[in-house]
Image (tube, rainbow, N blue to C red; front, side, top):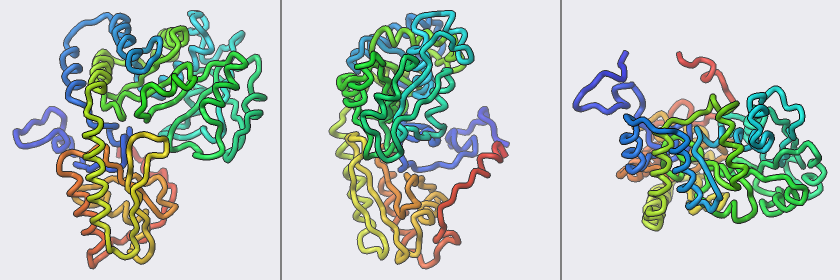
Length: 401
């Protein structure tokens, strides 16, 4: 068995650990390592790794940077967006009452402890989002139905026990029939209820607070290309209350100095990033992939915008039986190839999947184009070419075997 300490001048860390050298056209997925960390963040993490720091002071410095970029009054870095949601909700429950912080999550006597969320926003991002609410000791109050939320659904869900409203911005949510952020904030604020926004995968660092949110939680490791982390920003009193949860339920979610420094560096690099140049390279990859699929029977490809208005397009590939594949079968064949290509496959049961261009190393777009055409035009098909999608958790239950 190879170990981390094994070295070799002509090997990479993936080779030493026996990991597949995948090409990621799925997106900024935690299961694939989140993102390619920018050099500025790597440098900051390496520089601070051997240093002693006073963590509260480091977080004060992080507050200045996050506030500047987001328009918030204050901010801090936490372990990830999921922990940020829990901390923000716990803070809305306890305020700065240190004893109440220590009593969570079991003892909520005397605290507001309900969180209103639209039913169409109760998603799973690798874990159910309602669990992030329950970890704080709060009770989930769903509003509306899976297909529509009316204003009165939220209004009537709010009472004297309501601590916060949670609004989720993600491609996983129901993309129609839900209240807009502005509508949700108006209803909550009329009753004195703060609104927390889960914007884990969002590119825009300023609009959610500007549109009425009190707290916004971002991932530091997705579009920002920092280390795995979360950013909590917004109203200073609520940010302070969330930060104090490090003395309670968030102790198990603590973040290291390396991730704080790396996320700060990623935020500063974001200000200087050539966003237009990145967009141009992504568009070139999409056009290359679309062109490589022209004329292949049973395959249709369309460039479509991101559903939550991030400045990013993806290639949607429709797979019909004339191709001799199903969408699930083609995704599986690409993942099993050399090199393995991991597509965005969360909608394969609808007969399509997506290619996301935002995590490519140089030369990988061309490899993806070649592999797509090679798999689809090969005389022989893999055994599971006509695979039908099904939910199967057996692999997870076998880990680490």
